[in-house]
Amino acid sequence: MEKIRFVEEDGTEVEFYVEEQTRMNGCNYLLVTDSQDDEAQAYILKDLSDETDPQARYVMVEDDNEFETMSRLFSEMLEDVDLETE
Image (cartoon, rainbow, N blue to C red; front, side, top):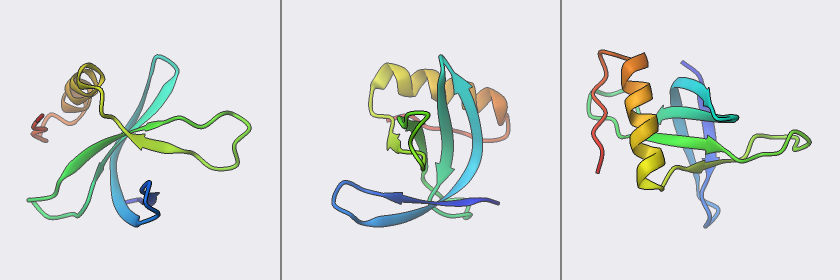
């Protein structure tokens, strides 16, 4: 399983496991988890980088409507995964 490094605003690096990826409305999204355990936390990341950026620039999806939409989409893609929304 692919791992990526995510750098938080405070500079802290966190590693995530990429569970799934998709593209919607011209944006790339990743469904990632913080571990491979059954109790792993899942997050949805959105790519905000420009075509000219040397690396992808992902941010956590925080908008409730966007999060709900992407959660449903990823749930459909991964029928055996239960994504809880807060």
